[in-house]
Length: 246
Ligand SMILES: O=C(O)CNC(=O)[C@H](CS)NC(=O)CCC(=O)C(=O)O
Image 1: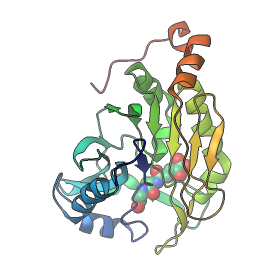
Image 2: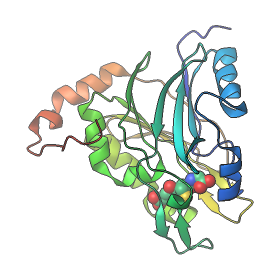
Image 3: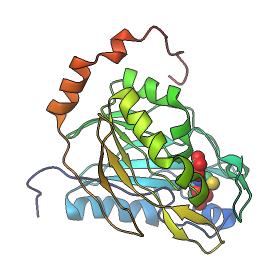
Image 4: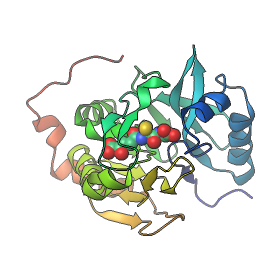
């Protein structure tokens, strides 16, 4: 059934294969545009008449993969691919202790901002949220809504998740749609969940406060324009972003 208004659905990072460890991700990694995960995503977007941001799909490159956030339009066409740039090679005081994402994942190089019926969509993934320069660069390229599929650890999420997502929304005056993996996974990893939709004023418009679920909100492009007009931080900024990642 055609939707009354266009709908965008954002899935968490590694939605199709989380917690089986690096080997599982490598085993299911697909060539770009080819494979059962991408086929299913394309069909789902068409069947439900939605735009679909597929958290991350492991996309083969050499003997590693990109943690690729794929965007499908309502016709089921892949319209954007953002490969996670910042990889989580970090020690955390939890039962995993040492995360080494770069062992199997190839870092992305390219910034992605893409036009859509909802506005200009800027793409980022999880650990990227700790690098404000990326979000600034997305805003400078026109981003209005940032898609942020994530799988924050329970420990770092409890400490930082709300502050980081809200800070990025406030600084760049963008909506931030942050879909988070939640639960205790096969390999013992624990993720924080708490999917959020944050307004360009930094308000949490919707939150999955417990467990798994679906949250939603409408995008108000007039409010976004009004916030940017009344507080023009972008044109007030005295610091330039370096021109990498073109
Ligand atoms: O490995 C997978 O299966 C899917 N990917 C992840 O879970 C990634 C890489 S290990 N997790 C993060 O980036 C957590 C960031 C974070 O928690 C923080 O910045 O505090």
